[in-house]
Image (cartoon, rainbow, N blue to C red; front, side, top):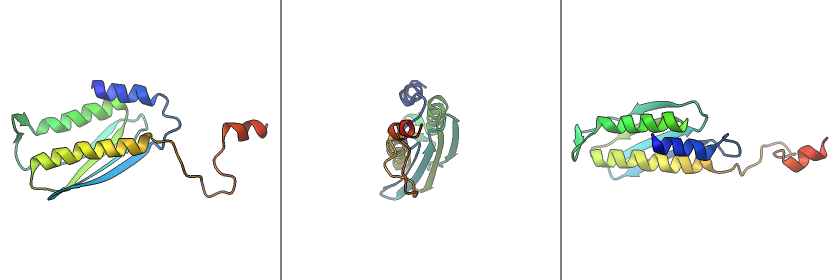
Length: 130
């Protein structure tokens, strides 16, 4: 909850960021896809099945609860899908690493311009056109 709240506060009004991010994370026999939208409309799609009920002493069903709380408190629409795997540790690790990489992508400022010849409007161009 606290991490999600911190992310939401850091994003503020969510202006000036790409907003969308995705990652495809391979780890040995595991492949996981993560996609997100920092839209301030929280939602979680969790398509992850573990190969065992516990990872060490932790119930694997609690990982979904963590991602749900994070998405809700960060205001992020988050999709996590494990495409295939055998090892529960690798499943969890690819979910977290995919989230981190997708967040890094989404938090960046836009760098490419649209296909129009005028490019992105800037504060300077808006003032000049008044």
